[in-house]
Image (cartoon, rainbow, N blue to C red; front, side, top):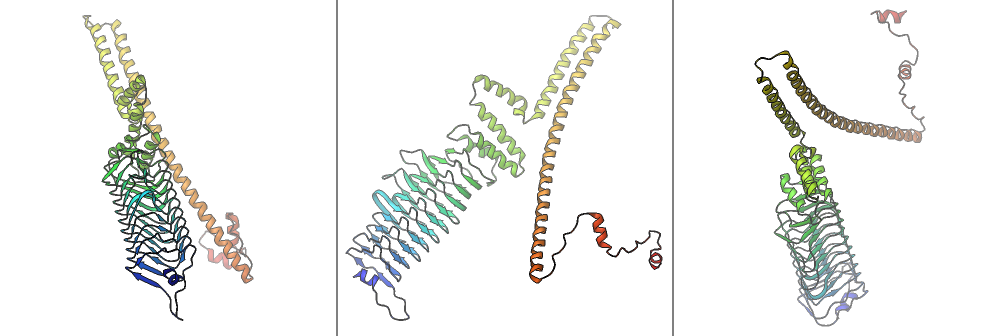
Length: 494
């Protein structure tokens, strides 16, 4: 009877038919496989004894809000409006694989439970607007692999528990989102896998509580993704590692407390937020599961240089060398300690210069004491004693001058080379801007020629860059030039 109402409902001229039922108990089988329904269907607050079969269903709009179902099979279905499953209680699999929903998929406050296998199947589904699933509760494995959402995804305050069925709570491989992905206060028992997702806006994972499954070490995987801004701050708990390898970000918004272990090799970002001390960010790099990862330090130093914070970039480079020192044999570590103490691995030349000057003063002091001790043995200072004293003083002065001069010359070359690089960058940018302006001018002239051609007018002559030609063009009648003696008016009259 219900299928007859859906397929062949009576309709008066000038009216739009619709089916609106609330609180009904549907005991028989509802088979709508490959059925085309031409009017909206609202079955809110209904109770289904048998799983509705809606494979390949075509319907303008479908609402099952507040209903209780043993499952729903609607793979490859097409909804021209919204599919409303808010506040539903579904005790079996919700199958929407390859479904096409022109509007929004609404699952706010829904509860999905399934003893085994996958409970939510949205793989390769296409959603024209938003995926709204705030406060969603899922007991089982959720799959959004290859899905496309043109608008936003809302998973705020959602609870995903796959502890009894799978090691992965949410599989969203290659998920494509048109705007933002909001998942603040998300709670998951099992891995949240966002590998290769595309989120041009913001991926908000603030205040999350994530726990890895028993057979895996990863609690959150966002590897190989392209994201505008990743917000991973003030999380409640992350029990497991966070995998961010080979992900491209515009903004990385991370603040303490840091995850226990991370994987950062290949992670690139242009900007860091918020403004935390560099020592705090280095702690996250020290927790990398892969050990010493040079790329992570270079990326962090580059981010600080990009905003002009050379001091923080220097500290990152020092931390990189010190971390690398821990991977060397004992003699390599010893040489590393010497370099760190004397010159800061070459990043603190002033310390090296001070140590050299101190060493020279000590040598001079000992040398002077030796010379004076020899002289004190003589009652008088004779001509024979002058050469050793003069030679010692001249040698010490010469060596000190050469060393100090070499250090100052090296610093001067470094500053000059740095300034030259900056001037080359500015000159290259200026040349690029000039080429761009010149190309725009040529495009404008070409457009003007097209307009003249359409109006039957001759094309404009290109402006010559020859100064003599420009002067000739400014005096087309070869008029006599005004004399420079102040009698220009008389000269013209003649």
